[in-house]
Image 1 (cartoon, rainbow, N blue to C red):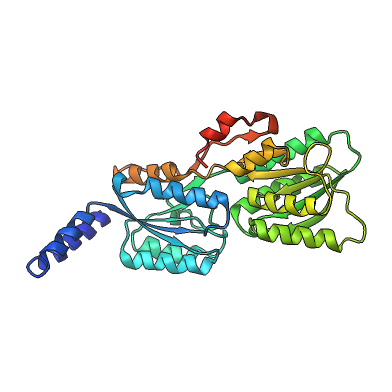
Image 2: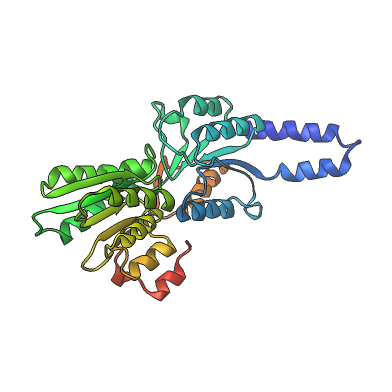
Length: 329
């Protein structure tokens, strides 16, 4: 109903402007037939994020009946709040947001609800007391992803008296970091032989992970014995591998087991080549799922509140040329 009223209002304005700007009026009326989406993306900090953005842009394209207003928050949550308030002022039909962190969303989402604009949260989640502020969430079960990685460590280090683990966390407060860290933290409580020798923040980027890993290795008076490096995405894994190899470590069979999440094309190549021991998929191609939520609402239906994308795990022996060629990211 809100969209119908909005469009009637816009058509009335277009009619009033007809005599002085006929060509411009025709353009505005044509645009009114598109569903307008305001989207706030985290940034372009990783290969996963770039693939995610491309998937969303393709799903919400003009050929599919949408006009997409896309905003890159450049890793700053305050930029997301600003863009969402701008979308509200522009009276978009739907808001799609990939939140940088979970907390702090109540106020701006209340503003969207008061304006009658449904909000769809993609990838990470938001922590709000009132569930009605979010129409639907589309993404992954990050704790389950972490549990898959933990089970691999349990299986491959079952007979070890001591397992030395380095943990590289993602962007603190993000849903992916909370879930993947949570699974590993729970596993430490259940395995007294697992030893967390260092925990660092990589912020999901290759450059920062390389820097913190290099600094850790260079500052150690004795070369650390490292069995496993648990990286929370592929770009962190790339940075960790670079730093480890520069310091004389072997990554792969007989050396350090690097665990990674995302399973991007380059991550799978590194896994096939033995540099990464385990790849836990986090599928970034969420555009079709998010678009299905909007389509359901456009047709008068009620979408499912939570929709998780299907994901797999990969070992080096699983990765073939055919698999790499078939991947969409």
